[in-house]
Amino acid sequence: MSHKNNTHKHLSQEELCDPVNLLALAKKIKQWGLELGFQAVGITDTDLTIAEQRFNQWLKQQMHGDMDYMSRHGSKRSRPAELESGTLSIISVRMDYFPEAPENAIELLKKSNQGYIARYSLGRDYHKVVRKRLQTLAKKLEQEIGSFGYRVFTDSAPVLEKPLAEKAGLGWIGKHSNVLQEKTGSWFFLGEIFTNLPLPADTPSVNHCGSCTKCITACPTQAIVEPYVVDSRLCISYLTIESHQSIPENLRPLMGNRIYGCDDCQLFCPWNRFSQQTVESDYFARGDLASPQLIDLFLWSESEFLSQTEGTAIRRIGHESWLRNIAVALGNCLRAEKHKKQQKRITNALKSRLQYPSKLVQEHVVWALKQINEV
Image 1 (tube, rainbow, N blue to C red):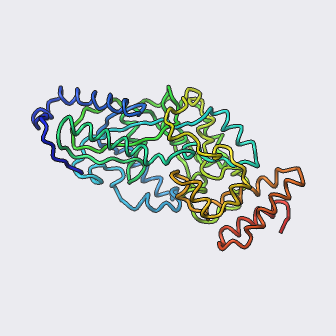
Image 2 (cartoon, one colour; image 1 turned 60 degrees about the horizontal axis):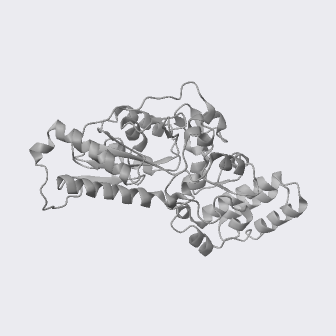
């Protein structure tokens, strides 16, 4: 944990152990967090025994696919004090990101010639935005109490963010495995500050999914294999972002026009009717990424791809996976397209990549052309 020297008058160690002072400090932390642009701040202890059991069972069933990093860190992911020595409390934060009305996103899924990009990635890379705010919050706390041990995270280390957020009272984990809040839905990022302060823990959230299964039935590839269990190997977000392998042929037609991630389980969740559009300009859609033409994206050179996605989360999948994903979407578009002139435009674009120096891209281009027997 990072420790900083500070010459200002602060609470003594004895005062920091006083429950009254700690309660007052927790209230200040939450207020500072709201002032910094987080929509909610909660605090929890480090006990993730139940979550650890579920996570280990998920790993045992190989549902993490090629995401080896999920199992690489042993128990550090579910035992915060092993990941960061001395951790006693965790400050969990929520930041809303949805950039538009959900109806727009649902309509876009019906337009086979346009690409659907998961809404969280349309603007600036959230890792940078959330992490910077968390650092500011930690520094604010340091100014108040003096040097203390802490480390900030946002989807950037082996941390079970969702169970921590649930325990901290930010929301419950829904059947789609995302965190839900009854007044705002699920369109938000999570972040944490691990700290050696014995802060008072908040009351965990209560599950309000009830008998609803809309997220399960909405999933295009049926990746939610049972309530609260997602098989990554079937998930479009995994297939288009995490995996750099060939996409299984039986899943390609089910992907539709989704070229980077998938939001269906959230788009059709009844709780998201209460969601609010983000006030963070960093998360507003960049350029034409909100409803792009597939052909235009497919014809980007690697340098254009890097330039157009600079500063976004999209960039890290690389140009090869980008072309692979769009080739599948163009194949699905070809199958749906009735106009010969438009079919010709699509096939010409696909054929321009037949000699692309990647067997992975070539394979998916050939598959796409086969959708109307063009090879």
